[in-house]
Image (cartoon, rainbow, N blue to C red):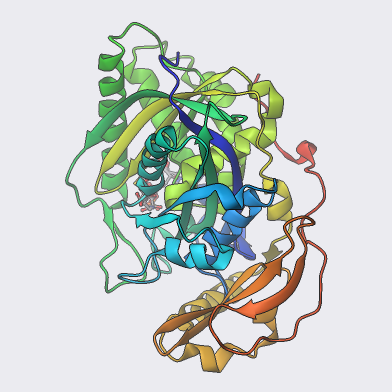
Length: 447
Ligand code: HMG
């Protein structure tokens, strides 16, 4: 399926999620909606959201830390750090520059953000692949980090979520590889207002049904562009990962593509159950993480299937509203990524709807100048089990607490503020995440 292997490929990946989640059944009850609509209509079970101390930067840095710490010597080789995000924290300063500081990446590293709705990380991966082919001894870090926020009580509210996926891109010549990509991409762009977030708003504006039709049209057009380039000579992989703003969007996408390809209408559903649904188990428990959404499905597939993926082909569809669509394919390599998603999910705290509303408000309250002085002493924010904590804004500057990492053991050994402020006293702690994943908790494997 993969016509020609490119030099830049995925070496490894890591994830990070916020601390809190609310169950969709509880949200449905509070919003006077039939819970079956969220559970079966949208395919959602749990919605993860940011509380105080968490933002796009802490999520990005934590995901990156989780992938870099898996092997010593990685950090020193990072020469490119791209953050794909549509929920950046500043109109000018990049999230990548914060990540660079928090992780102490090499000073010679090239750092920047890419913004294009949910498409940013895919653009970053393609750029990183090209860069790695010119710098085969170095590594590129592409981080997809986002917070999906809609108005409370809106149709979009149950499709909120937050999280980050960090992908380490390296050369096929020098690294053990998880996933190589074809050099062929099917593209489609269209200037539409289906989903957007004006700079004066914290929440997105969306034409829900229209956004679904834009997604599906973009997908079919990108698929056709891909097929033209391979001159319709081959069929595309059965295993498919779709951008999943809510899990049932992937179901709609699979069905539309099935129909478009003229395949047996009786078999789209069993094909979905077998080839698409298994990768969505984490999306159902996190919600939309915008640009990281399709890479969360990829991480979930690694966690579910492990070595069984070796030499299998996969198709990926990335969609960013506004819009840009890309359909591309890859082949799994001999190395298996171990993102430990279930372990991270199980480390979260469940809250009720009242607490979700309160914690979300408190998180947003930190996004104003002067918030640092008001909150920096609150003990919950100096929770030492998190490697990076956002403490608020002082003199228009964001202040982060960084728990120093011992890269050998994965322990947090001390804490410092990213600025010249005095260091809060914190005890030495063991790493929060060490146990192995219980695959029995995952549903449905790919056969
Ligand atoms: P809505 O109006 O609340 O929902 O909006 P609905 O009435 O369309 O119902 C949703 C589904 O639940 C339907 O299924 C209903 O039949 C079903 P469908 O017909 O679509 O298969 N349903 C039930 N099922 C079982 N029991 C029941 C029941 N009641 C209804 N009792 C919408 C849904 C997704 C539009 C809304 O949540 C929304 O606006 N979300 C945000 C936008 C979005 O996610 N768009 C997706 C495509 S655009 C995209 O992916 C880009 C994006 O990620 C942003 C970016 O690029 O940065 C969003």
